[in-house]
Amino acid sequence: MLNKHPLRQDEGRQACHRALDRYHQEAGYRWLGRATSMLVLAGQAMLLHASLQRPTGWAMGVVCVPLALFLADLVNGLVHLWMDHNSRYGGWTGPLVAAFHLHHARLRYEEKPLWRVYVHESGFKLWLPPVILIFLLMDKWFTLPAPLLRVVALSAILSSVAELSHFLCHNRDGRLLRKLGRMGLLLDKARHLRHHREDNVSYAFLNGWSDPLIDRLASWGFKGYKQGTDRHVEGWTPPR
Image 1: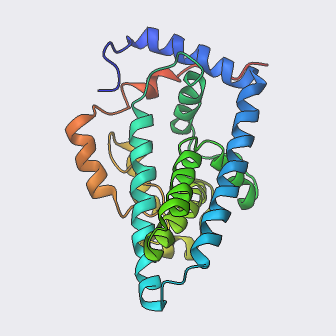
Image 2 (image 1 turned 30 degrees about the vertical axis):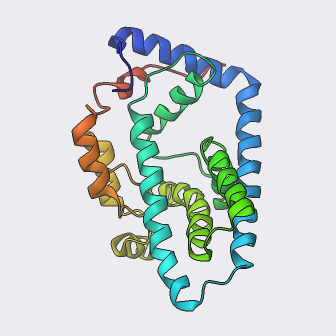
């Protein structure tokens, strides 16, 4: 479990609200998001450049794409699973955890151009710059196999594309998007709606390929969010 001593509902709500106030009042969190976005974008560009310098051949290149799609869907879904159950609102990371829980409190997000979604939402992926750095260093020191480097590069980019897919699922509709969702190339609205209407299911948010695996893991080790962290954000309003 995430917490050895889980907070009671009233304690959790109070702690979450204090953390949310900090997140919106302290400028350091805005600068952290911007810096993380820039690191993610730079790292993605560096990985892609290194990958393109080492051709994989067309057949292996084709194989790398679905592998990267599944890997990005799985990793981001597992992060989503972990964060949905995280109620550690103390310390400097607490406001980031609390802000994450706001995504369950609204079914439509603020409208913005898709490129801004890509850049802005990448700023919440604090785990991604260290992962990118590790693989860049491993490639420098050991020269990673070209297919592995290609999968890692595509997965890093698709981790940000997952935010676009999630945004489109909430804020856009249309025949093409519905078709891409049914094909499993983007997040299917009906699949993702389960995450908001039910409990402890459908955490993947790139295309949902990894949902069966993540749902099984969730059922083994997690209790769900409907009566937990979802209740913690109730009643909070942004400070003026």
